[in-house]
Length: 78
Image (cartoon, rainbow, N blue to C red):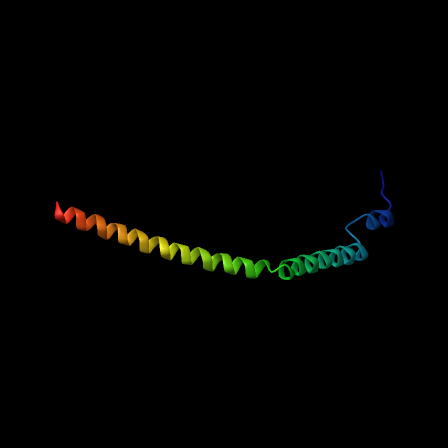
């Protein structure tokens, strides 16, 4: 069975138009995603949450240090 070379070439790969359309769609989706991330203040909220977490961790470490000191004082008295 002999294939026609012209129709065989036409069926190979994707066309340049399909590739350009795909790239344009991906760029539009990326633009929308970036706008949503920056517009809602998501990054700012994440920074604030990080600062609050670090502050609470420092407070917890300070409280634990105080408890350890109290325990050590009690053990020395015994």
